[in-house]
Length: 353
Ligand code: SF4
Image (cartoon, rainbow, N blue to C red; front, side, top):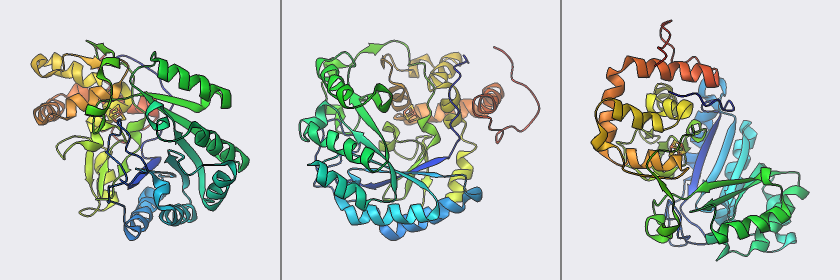
């Protein structure tokens, strides 16, 4: 396993609530296929109960709460109730939005003022969104966030960072904010994006992306109670995926999070990136299960390709159960990169190879 030192991101320091599949628009690249015709929303009573459980978990190690969708502002009273409850519980609350509601500076200010418990807003702005939502809304939302002293960033998704549409959008964004507030991710053809995006724009590589994944530290809870280890493409996968952590209508958060503490797949991805799973498969002679190509620079594509096949998930689990060295490296990877000793069970150090 190669070293790739990264900023420390404590496991379970932040949890997401996916409030709704409803959205004002139906973007062609939406993983969860959100849209105006979707009906599923998280019940208020469930959200409150789960937030209380999360806050009690291990004396409050979870301190951040991200509200996402769909479009969380679609049901504003719902968003305000949940964010107020979370804030009263002591969470730092953030929200992801397409800014459809920021039709003018005044309106953006009015809406964000109502959301007094939300401290940070992440605005989705990309070529696909801006076909349906004026770019001025993004500007208005940022203006209002700054005016109210809320933190903000801009989340951009693209098939290709060289595409003219992406470069043009970045020019527009850099006129209203600094590069440090813009996060770009590569679209993976999952959900509506499977058919909705221009596949010709995707760049492929025979090797998996090398980065480790900080997002695997932050599980997300869905309206049906499912708890998934990250907000990436595995949110669309069945229960056989190792990213599926449990269901809150069947178990309590303590049981689900305690089990996640010992999920070797998850922590190997956090410490080393999903490519170590590809390497493990190859090292044990499972080359025929390994994907032929990967989307360039898209670590989520590595996870999705591996975990969307039940056979690969089962082989990975079996290999980990029988590979003490992999387990040890993962345990010490957590210790080295994140200062987390939760998995260390013995004082045997891992070998170098
Ligand atoms: S790299 Fe894997 S674990 Fe991380 S966000 Fe993407 S799909 Fe999830």
